[in-house]
Image (cartoon, rainbow, N blue to C red; front, side):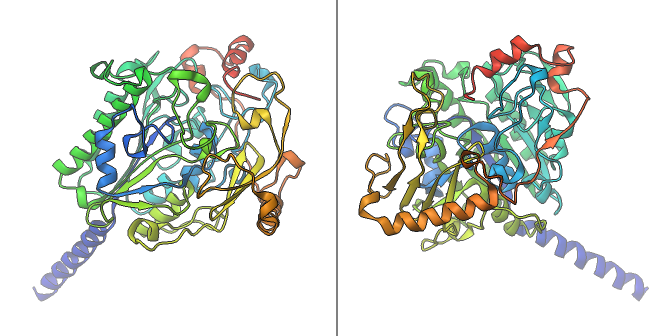
Length: 493
């Protein structure tokens, strides 16, 4: 009898301890907009786009002013966020030519049907949190490979619901799990359906812990907004799309509150890169930063970032320290008690920036990559941009002399965030220091600009044969050359 009682008590103690550990591990939600610029939220100064729910999220948490993505374009940026690495480290900086698909040049992002994708050997946020018992879901844009070997369900996510690449790539199919359920996807209702799926996931896993990665396809062109918000923004269709996202963020925060999960959940809102400026009114704004998506300037890399966790993150804080999307992996791993693999990463733990007013950036240097080209370095307030071309400075813009050389420059980002005044002649010691940082990074991760391979790049994922999502949707084994070329027109070589 006493043995039975003791065994029961022991089991109860183990269960209670397990419950306590689960309760202390936060739920994690990352909300990622697509091509939304630094200036496209009310709390970041937008004069024409009203975002009351995201502004309220900032008022209830911390708003970062100097937050960077790992790249200035879709695929590499997402690889950096999920792996905690600069894209060249994980083979995701730029992708080999695939002549059989009609793509004769190397590519900056993955296209449907490609034989390349994120290497399954890499650790990801999904894998890391799954290893410590988190329920995991990926909703929205994936864009890290559309062959079965590269699907979200192979990288630690229990479920997937979304378009597996950019919404301008054809066919824009909607997947549920590993099946196509809608072709073409009705993008006017997509954010609403993503939101409903997110709320259902939260409800179904309210016992926690859970990880939700919701990557909107919006406001990337072609721009779509929910019908209920059509014409509601002074900023036209683009503004309506951002307002739709703002509504979605509010719905998700309301769902957390309704389930009693507010104080158990870390929620982050950010964007994958800067605005697509050449799209005109259907592209966003990075004011006061210079340039935008796929450029060498801060307008391509520096994005809005807000983190909210009531009771843990002090409300109304503004953090002006340098932080990056690569930091999510080590930070969340520490908060969840998960162990990281021995594979080297570039992200750092930014918990002190989340929770402490006096927290300092763990980054001595942040490096800017365009594909596999090392373009600039930032250390503290200083940014040194190397000699680039006109095309690299202005992203996708059609130019008469795209290869015209633009000289290097040193910028004080504290008082010149627009990178307009080169002060290198006034600070030769700073230039020398930053050049040494560039040389060290170049030796490790390479620099295609100088034909340096680097000694720490890991291989991109690659498969032969099999069917991609495009193959399933089209019934073709490969993209026809004219289709591939049409899609490639959207990407600068």
